[in-house]
Image (cartoon, rainbow, N blue to C red; front, side, top):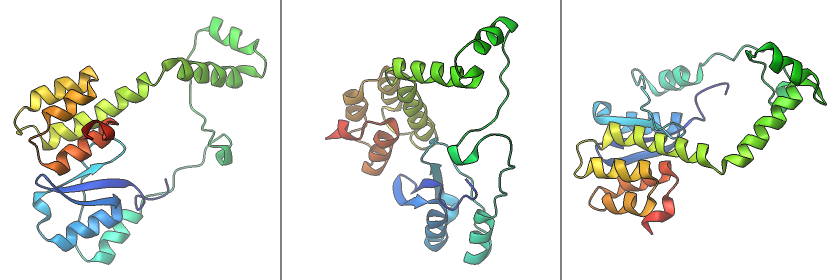
Amino acid sequence: MSNHLSTACTAFAGTALLSSGALIDVALAIKAAGDDAAMLVFDDASGRVVDLDLRGSTADIVQRLGAAPEPARGRGRPKLGVVAREVTLLPRHWEWLGQQPGGASQALRRLIDAARKADGGATAAKADRERAYCFLSALAGDLPGYEEVIRALFAGDAPAFANRMADWPSDVQAYALRLAGHETAAQ
């Protein structure tokens, strides 16, 4: 991403959702609300807290958030999204890959695609749980029943996860369910 302006995030003032959307929009909403010390901003992709520098004018904030350097162009096919990285394998692995139709890169892509298909969504579910956990540990650790909520989250029990948050503020519930991939569990 060439800048942070389009990073999706969500801001909370205490346990109330203040703003959700592109980072720049959320940052400006926080600035307009005033007391940014009581705000927590979460990256929607990771659930992690985002630190914002909201000093100065609106123009200063826009410039600071939009001034991320362009990533260095490396090898690969950028139009296709191909990124060159280093892979360390044993000689027997390189030998086998070299014998595969299309060469090592194509063979690795096929193996990864097959593994992703066989995964059955387990990796995505784990990432969803981690994302929700990051958010909950930062914002909801003092809420009643926090430990039970976390146990239900990591057990993959969507109905129990939603039910154990029933007495929590609705904004916290909704965002936690969204990050965990369980938006329909509360309905």
